[in-house]
Amino acid sequence: EAQVTQNPRYLITVTGKKLTVTCSQNMNHEYMSWYRQDPGLGLRQIYYSMNVEVTDKGDVPEGYKVSRKEKRNFPLILESPSPNQTSLYFCASSLTGINYGYTFGSGTRLTVV
Amino acid sequence: AQKITQTQPGMFVQEKEAVTLDCTYDTSDQSYGLFWYKQPSSGEMIFLIYQGSYDEQNATEGRYSLNFQKARKSANLVISASQLGDSAMYFCAMREGFSGRGSTLGRLYFGRGTQLTVWP
Image 1 (spheres, helix red, strand yellow):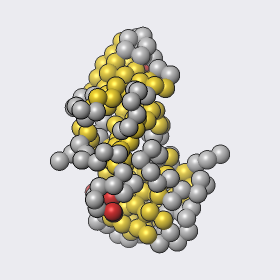
Image 2 (spheres, one colour):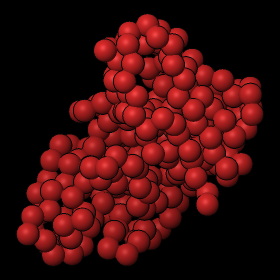
Image 3 (spheres, chains in turn blue, purple):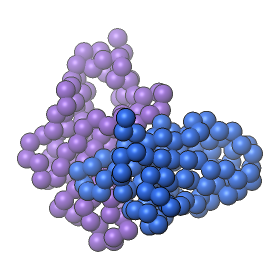
């Protein structure tokens, strides 16, 4: 089944404890992206990747890191999480082109206390 | 300026009635794609419908149709014969062909969403 697999689904952590949210897609998509969703703000892009070893910042990259060492994987790293990073996170992938929408992962609900 | 504007934070509709969710967009590109996604309370993002900027006919997918008015830069979602299961958050999104800044190529811009409630 074509899908984006994101883990974990739920995570509660403490301020400053490094964490990684994994994202993997099995569709050979070039484009991958991370979004965070907060009430009233919609989805805001954190980072994206056009292909292996090609990543760039989105609208809200502060406090996050990403890497794209393999085409299928695009992990999101929070080196020192803070409470303002409490949010719902989505990984998404797609082919490049205007007529391709994203396939989303199931989301990760992160709480930083 | 916002790329996608959804002016209705919340909408209510009675079961079996039709409802229109508004979306306007801002782009200087000639080539772009417009999308609608549904997010039920369980949280997943579900693709509903796509409209290309060069498509002359409005897109339809079952009970969903997209009222595309290019000159007005609007891409409203019409849901016919609403069902209780349509209660969800709905997001309008746009993907540009090339913004002039290569780094934004491929990006999907989202609006802030409209919370639709269908009542019996």
